[in-house]
Amino acid sequence: VQTAAPLIPESPTYDKLRKAASHCQACPLWKTGTQTVFGEPAGRPHRGPRVMLVGEQPGDQEDRAGKPFVGPSGRLLDEALEAAGIDRSQVYVTNTVKHFKWTGQGKRRIHAKPNTSEVRACLPWLEAEIRVFRPDVIVCLGATAAQALLGKDFRVTQSRGQPMSSDWARVVVATVHPSSILRAPDPEAREAQLDAFIDDLRTVARLIH
Ligand code: URA
Ligand code: SF4
Image (cartoon, rainbow, N blue to C red):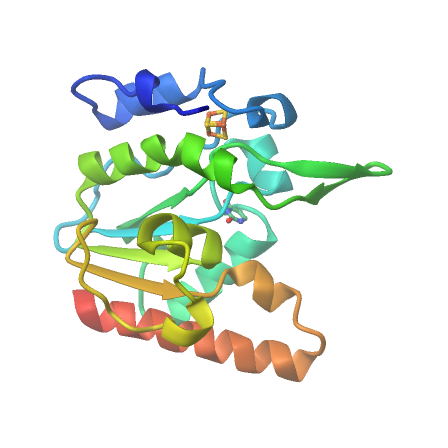
């Protein structure tokens, strides 16, 4: 089976992990993605509880920039974090899968969902990030992250916004992926979905403030 496990350095640090991940070819996605998009930031510029946000996989802009959540989803995430009173510079942001998976449609690269074997292959990187960063709170953004960490039966629609204890961190909270809000059918639906997302992030804010 394909897995990044053999590539994980023996006593990992953030820098060692990031460097090793940059050469990962454990699943076929290294061919479609431009580069490995690893979690950021490395340092912890603040004291206090450590929060890790886990998305699905880099998008088109993240793939080009080599940084997580810098495109449209990232801007929405920043807006929601600010509304919830969480400083993005306080949190470590990463993805379940580190390469961009897409299908071509003319010149546009359309996001394609990673499959279970790609998620399984890439998971050792996330596990190692968790071991190195030791988050107090992990926020799963969407079903891919939530199911990777909480099991395939986890349903975001049923359990979103609920703090759960877990082996991964003192508390895990799952919510929707910001891209689902960008796909809302009309402005009212979008507003309602954004409010619900901010509510979930306020729950996170209460856990850390
Ligand atoms: N969506 C994600 O899940 N992660 C990113 O980094 C960007 C978009
Ligand atoms: Fe490695 Fe993950 Fe990229 Fe697959 S998606 S090649 S497992 S870093």
